[in-house]
Image 1 (cartoon, one colour):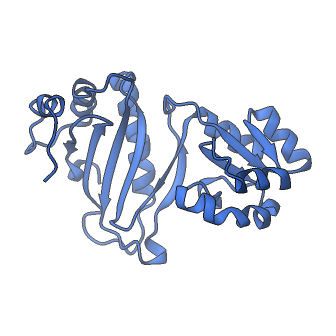
Image 2 (image 1 turned 120 degrees about the horizontal axis):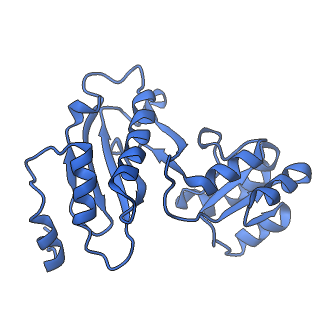
Length: 230
């Protein structure tokens, strides 16, 4: 069992581990129990009754949170011609083709999101070993492989987050910062909950959301009642 420090233990005293909190209570408590000396992220964790090994039960997508993420994302775009100009106009941090592929191959990784046009994916595919393990590979399901480059870049800059079920049938996503108001965090939480509910696979049986909790980067987990979210 890992040992927790004094700050964590003090924060944990404010949370009843046997209680399910309402959304409003949880957002208030997640702000109160953050003990970081910086503006920490607020993260939500879902565990679902799906089998990620089955292709029809893999849940993945993206959404623009109503109140953003509180973080400015650095975006690079692989595009040529008009789409490259669109990317620059939309605020992409770097735009290119072969020269950008080579730059990433040589170790450049100072970015958070990668967007590409479909015709560029043959070249971007060469970066699979670099981008794949970091979860940065563009994907049509998350809106990062598209011809509408302007929309994709603007969405990322506006606070788009990706969600994806992992091998343990869980989804972990940030929904804002501790400095957000309780109302802003609640709105972001509900927006993510709604898209996860809509993504329920037909093959998922029984109680779809098995558990859900929120926590600050440095703070204890706060459980919500999954039965009130299904």
